[in-house]
Image 1 (spheres, one colour):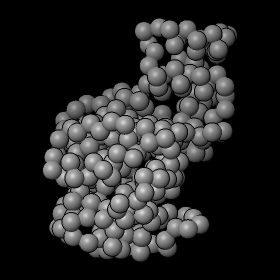
Image 2 (image 1 turned 120 degrees about the vertical axis):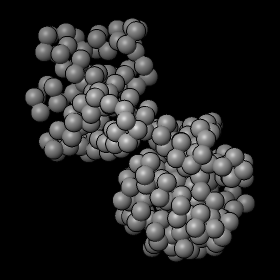
Image 3 (image 1 turned 180 degrees about the vertical axis):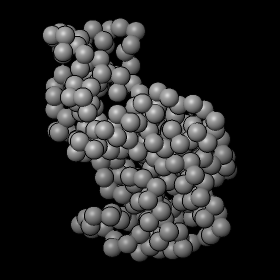
Length: 279
């Protein structure tokens, strides 16, 4: 079994770290907000480890953790980044890891916190094939599927494009449900019919049901603030590649308005407030 550092004990990271520990690995954790049993700093957690994982909020959090941890990892260790970051940040981190003699795996994930706790995540990987093969025993406890998209950075490209599509979908559901409510339709019936129709997707159906429940501040799965971040990274990537992401820009701007209204830290389905309240 391996000695593993894990950075980030949020809704996703807690379950992922527990899965690694349950598989018999020695897991040494660090979190920006101190947690019982966690190490005081990323470098202390990483010392002598065979691999380090990160599941953090954004580019800035990733940079703060890895800048400290990379020098503490022994040559040949894995640096496995599971956070949803900008492609530029991922490529920067990969170069730093390689310069230190480390093996880097770009591995953003999809799945909700319950999937993380059950080890049922899907991993979107960008890595050298040999590095991925060597890392598979470390990735197995947290995942049921590994999709290898190519070299480092390609897993992040896929994650950003699907999260940008998700931002558009959820913003559209919020707008549609606000319209239905303003017209006097029964929102539960609207959500039930949506689930049977051509506009249905798992994400759209889940969002519609949360809007019906009007419980955005309970059991928060993914915040509007995080959705804004992911959409911003996705739009920036599109611009770098010469793609006009106008729908993505519209969704990103809607989430920006949500955050500015101090509603960014509840569930992202609070996006229904943007059209409903004219934010």
